[in-house]
Amino acid sequence: MNDLIDEIFRVFSEYGSEEYLGERVSMTEHMLQSASAAEQDSAPPQLVAAALLHDYGHFIHEFPADAAEHGIDTQHEEAAHAFLSEHFGPEIAEPIRMHVAAKRYLCATDPSYLGELSPASVHSLHLQGGPYSAEEVVEFEMSPYARDAVRLRRYDDMGKVEGLETPDLEHYRPVLEAAMRS
Ligand code: FE
Image (tube, rainbow, N blue to C red; front, side):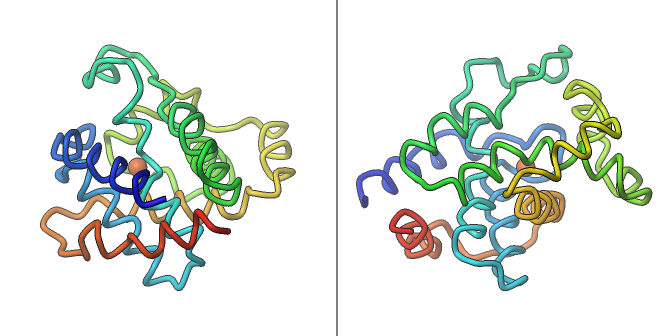
């Protein structure tokens, strides 16, 4: 268990200082801020862990870092799910897999949501297929993880604040351990 967490943290330290796709924070800052938002919202450990790891796919997918600028959707949520579902339960892996879907869902169902998105997130929305249709909204809501995916999406959107102080990665080791055991 500790070996896996060490490996995850090593990947963070190797790739996490890269800019988070057009935002004013690094990848690691973004994911720490998302996890911190989940903690402050008293989310269960599985959801805090999901927030911390939700963009792990950006570290491990095989596309170049500037893929979005070239109009390519890297499907980072699928890369994260493929890796994380081997080690974590569906309460963690499924909201992560669905966090892009949750954006498309919220754009279709919450009139104010699109206006709150960062420019980079609006750009990727179009690569990811745009707002959901009415049928896709219904399909999304049928998933048992839809609510957690929407919560995760809100934490994701909050994690883009330049210079915001958060706990460091080690602070989340017990959370990841608890999430792995569950
Ligand atoms: Fe994110």
